[in-house]
Length: 98
Image (tube, rainbow, N blue to C red; front, side, top):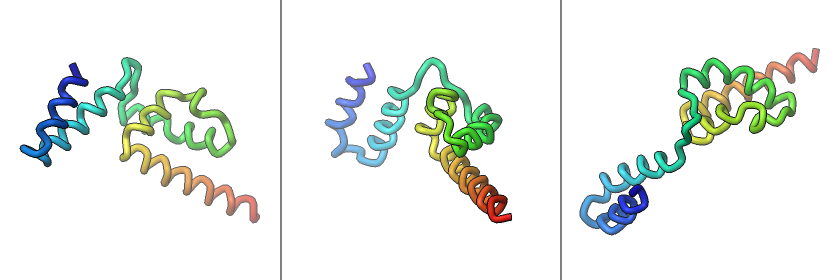
């Protein structure tokens, strides 16, 4: 059904380009969803552990796959993750200099 909606949206782009893009984006995100997902709040509770493991060289995609999947789909949480990783890496570099 989602494929039919996407095809319809692609055919009707000339009629409503702004709305069509929005709806198409939502439908594409729906196709990427999984039964086992976690919310932004749950990611916020785990993101420090995820970032520390990542900086330690651990395979976070296998250790915390739900967090990784969420970060792949959520630009806001990904931005928070990136800032945290940068801060932890900076903190680690300062500690190494001492």
